[in-house]
Image 1 (cartoon, rainbow, N blue to C red):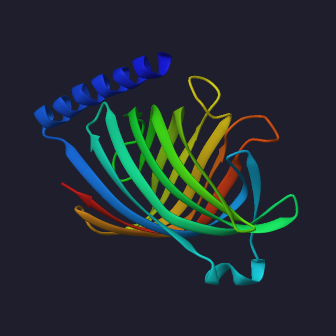
Image 2: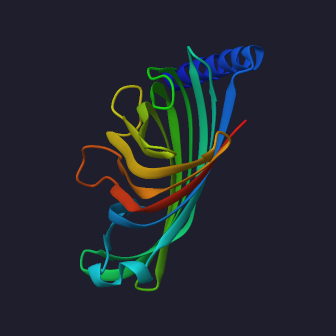
Length: 239
């Protein structure tokens, strides 16, 4: 019940912020991103703990691809953020008790957050709190036998977004997020990145960088505990 109340509170806050931003004729930003990375760790599938194996010499032959969109409304006193990310067909070599197999995972992640802009001018620093959801579908093939299940998690998160001007038209963009435990299904989650941004004009920018994100479902040794890391590229538009 507390998660439903928390979710409704977030939605109400988003609606108020959206109306305020529209009334004040403040900025709206849209960021479209893609990233290529690798999954590591262990995933529980229908009672089977699949440990993911990656050959460090073949990382570039074993990339998985994800896509995301992020919408931000901002004025001088408040920031509203909504995002959605899709990771399709993550295929990994795994082992279960020494038996080799393969794991295919699909992930859908969305996040709603409200925050306060602490920075002004060309460099900005935003602090936000919100709710993130992960929908994960897994299919494990082990010795010709197929196992499958799905999991949906809701987690309270804290976010920091920093945009720092290095020199003319070049910026360092650092998005950070962590959550879990309190008002959450997960034990611990995190997402951290660093990107070099080039601002073509006030309405358009390009970013490239690196990102790592991870989930620890619980403190049990039998629980899913995985992370993903890789290269990211984004285009940002401001209206």
